[in-house]
Amino acid sequence: MDEDKKPVDPKIPTRQIAIPIDVNSYYINGASVGLTPTEIQLNTAVNGRPTSKVLIPFPVAKSIALGILEAIKDYENKTSVKVLEVNEIGTSLQK
Image (cartoon, rainbow, N blue to C red; front, side, top):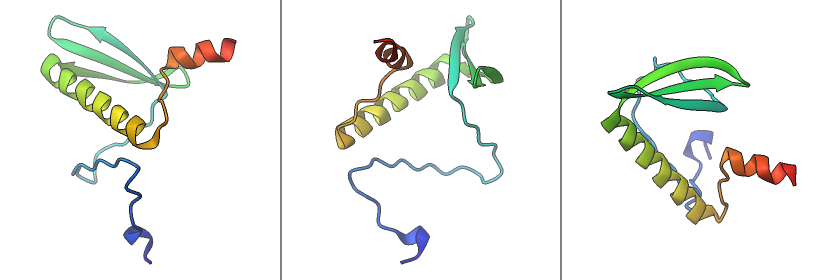
């Protein structure tokens, strides 16, 4: 079977969106959120080094946040794996 024709495991949630091929792709492992009167400011980092600042209007930010929460709940329900928050991981490692 071709690599790109492998069957998808129905237990693992997948979400696909159409994005032009020429957009940048980023990995982050840190983030902070700030507020302006009209926008959310998302600051991203990799290993503590700032990498980008994204300004997001409140309606778009809310839609993104709700979509992310829905995807995480879907993942947790289908895999029976709880996704821990960064603070929960830190607390668990200090025990």
